[in-house]
Length: 248
Image 1 (cartoon, one colour):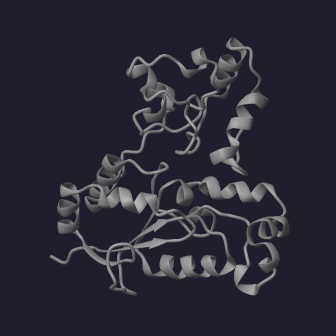
Image 2 (cartoon, rainbow, N blue to C red; image 1 turned 120 degrees about the vertical axis):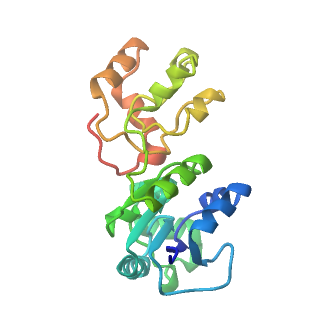
């Protein structure tokens, strides 16, 4: 039986999510044994135009990147968005809050007008092409990566939670970060990370993106309880939520 051919590509990102794949250590051997990795710039020099599954890390920030992504999509039977930059645009979408000419000037100075430094509004992968599966987070959770890949290989729907981080936080009996005077995004952000940040003394920053149907009224009640406003919450949503649609 022919093993599925997998290619991993990166766009605008730090490649930290790919490092998480490498960090699977012994488990990666089992996964690699189930597929044929034909292209992965971070781990091998070989390249291929033939693959069944394309895994994309990074957001799309240039017109030429959109064209490259469309070509990858046309060749892949299945396309997976890997990490926050690919799934929601990530921190890179902060750029969308500013005039692009000012952005180029700030970053490149006197070289800002050079043609090869062309930039556009940052997009998540699914704002350019169809995405078949998502692996959320910044960086991704190694265990979740393995679960998603195995599910897809078996033809099953990946087990991505559709409930907020607060559920995991309460299950761990964590003291709510609001009790520490912090504005946590747990009420509206997709779970699946095991409430990693709140469990380690930090508020949720929102790297997994909004849950599909956030309980807006519950979020408002939390704000009211702690003497805060919805605008206070929105200010904290900017880091990973710039220019994303929400109903708060």
